[in-house]
Image 1 (cartoon, rainbow, N blue to C red):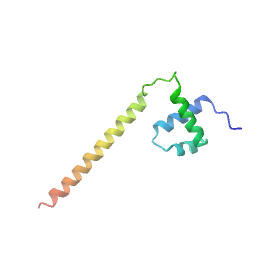
Image 2: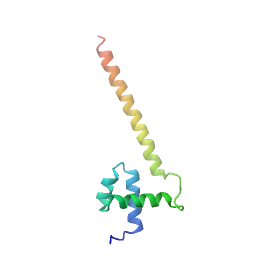
Image 3: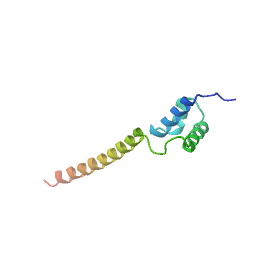
Length: 90
């Protein structure tokens, strides 16, 4: 039989899997649980009627920061291309 993990342990593993940007395989290995076990915990968490359906503030902030980061990278790339173009005009 497998280990009996506490509810807090499961919640933390699910939180890390959903918000860290790491792969689920990596999170499962870091927590010392099987990949399918972590997947099962995530499914249970999503079906939990007591869990609020709205994103937490942390998840919302992470999503906003990723979007901003993507935009800044695009702007940087455009500026690099413009610099090369104008440097070649001399």
